[in-house]
Length: 146
Image (cartoon, rainbow, N blue to C red; front, side, top):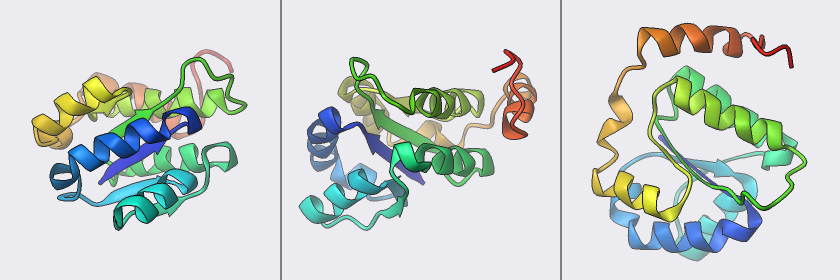
């Protein structure tokens, strides 16, 4: 499953990217945070599972789906200039995706590269090192004391 997430200032970028790559994207199950999923449903008629909005726990719900192996690719058009009240949740989502060794696209250029490859990296197993590092995160324990 591909997780599709976008901050408010980046939603049109994600919408346009999905529109251009609809064939590749719709070959997979889709999940998105509530307003992103609603936008993709209303504008493109996509079948997409919805979780809570990011600030209300949606990023954490997607974290869980990455950890369980349900989400195998992440397309997250985040706005690096936006002071997100849930910035730690955003960073945790990207961190878990990296630790689990799934493809991550944070902007249209990286998303294009991922879709051109047909999301073929999504079935790559995580390395032993990334799995060991992810275990404390999955249990809610952080090595940095935060």
